Length: 108
Image 1 (cartoon, helix red, strand yellow):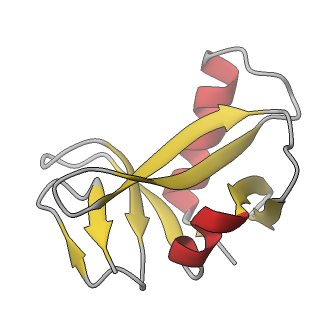
Image 2: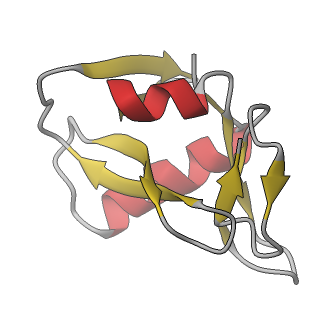
């Protein structure tokens, strides 16, 4: 399962409204090759499910991930940080053995 923190929930709801996304929008997360640690996180808002998508709901927010990415993201919590060290969504991934300094890439 992939979960969301309360901060991530509030920010996602805010962005969906600010960007005039459809009411049935969800957060699509994934993993792709690249970044300084080998794998990079992807995050976008979407409203169309694809074949093989895994769908989770936490705190009223739907999170969708493709099967391949789910292997790397199982157990991850999506958080949102508004602190001085950076602002944005953060992946708290228990499967990552190493992350880069910016937190946007990882390795397993």
